Length: 124
Image 1: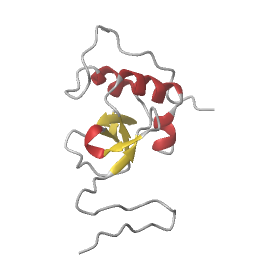
Image 2: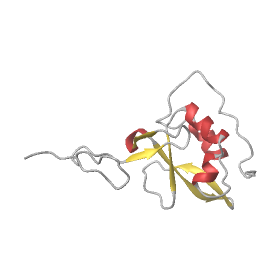
Image 3: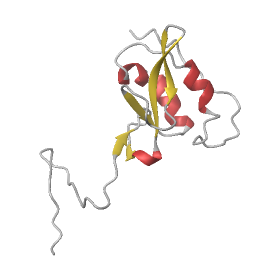
Image 4: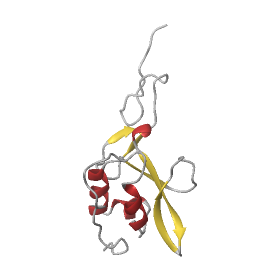
């Protein structure tokens, strides 16, 4: 049997289907990575506001965004207002930021303070 590589309409190689893993793009650094290396976040209604929260089991309904569990990616996503764009509107990120450093996938660093963030509803 000869292994052949097929090409999609966008010109990307599909490679072998045996080792295919879902690939997603981090909203922080914009790098593509295997889904297993990223954490999924979704929005939930908390106290009447759409808040971004971790989707621990990757099963919550709705539009999701993907993020490396790295402080640099979180800070970049906040600075670029990537969560507002990913969820197509103003979202609250305070809950996500506060829980980021306690997330099991987050690396342990000497940093004790969560990253600072601008007002999430002020995307102009």
